[in-house]
Every structure is written in structure tokens, then in C-alpha cells.
Image (cartoon, rainbow, N blue to C red; front, side):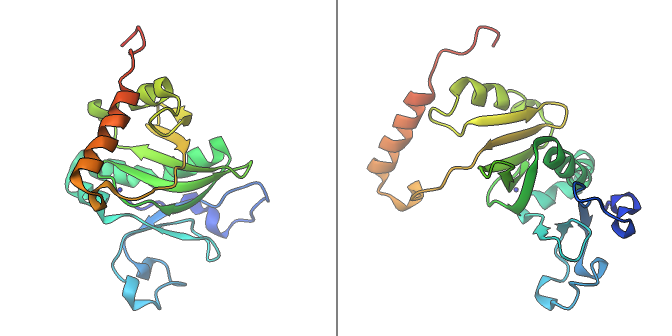
Length: 193
């Protein structure tokens, strides 16, 4: 919910259309311009490698993947994947969104100003058909799929504004809402699935 240094581009002259590289820093000592904030020491972060660029925290909900070799490789690839998707789809990336244990979800804004979510999924058989399902539902009962990159296990989906959490509602009301959503999603699958 590895470390890349951006290929040495941090000190190079930047063209206006270049995006600075993303990187993961293990702690803020790796980011001298931010090391003065003791509250943030030791937290894993993604940053763009430039002092004026936003710093994005790697959520604790996914950093546990570092204990697994496949997960560690995936975590190390996130800066590159996020940068490539931002360039491919013309995105300005924002903060990670809460929740999730097998994907990094970042707030994003498209060139046209539309708010979106960049979702970088852990490559796993269990989530292989997620983009197909989202495309099939086409925004009816689920977020609309805007773009997909199957090689990067990346999705760009519409950003939905959350309402009241179902855990805050009475059980009978929550069950009714869940049932309504499930009825909406229960559609005939595409012929190839």
C-alpha cells in the first residue's frame, strides 16, 4: 500500500519536458535536504531526486514485502515503474493513498487535470485479471479503468471520492450496500474468460 539514483541525472541540466527521476531512500540521511526533520528519520520514502520535488512515503502496508525476495525486487522496481508510467500517461504523481497490501497506489493528475490513481500491482496470478474486470465493468460499480500496462502491472484508474466507511454504518445498512454493489458487479463475463 531498493534504491535508484536516477542514473546520475540529478546533477544534469534538465529540459522542461523531462521529469526528474524517482528513487527510494532507506532513510532521510540519504536525502540531506530533508534530514533535519527527526520525526521522519528511518522511514522509507520515494522521492524524485530533486530538492523542490515532493517526497512520497512508501506505505507501511507494503514495505513488509522487503522480507520476500520477489517482494523486495518489486519494491525496488517501484520508482522506475512510477516514473515510466508518469511519462507514458502524462501524469503528475502525488501522495500514496491509504490501504492496500499488494500494490502501491498513488494519487495522480492527468495532463487534462483529471484526478486519477496510479496503481502499481505486485505481479501475481491472483491479480492478473483485475484490469480485465475493471474494463468489463466500465465504471459501473467499480472505478473506471483509464489506462493499463500489462508489462508493468500498472493501472490508471479514475479517482473516486470516498464516502462513509461501511464499518461506521449499522450492520444491516452495510450489508444492504454491499449486496447492491455485488448485484451491480455480477455481470456476464466476457466470452474469453
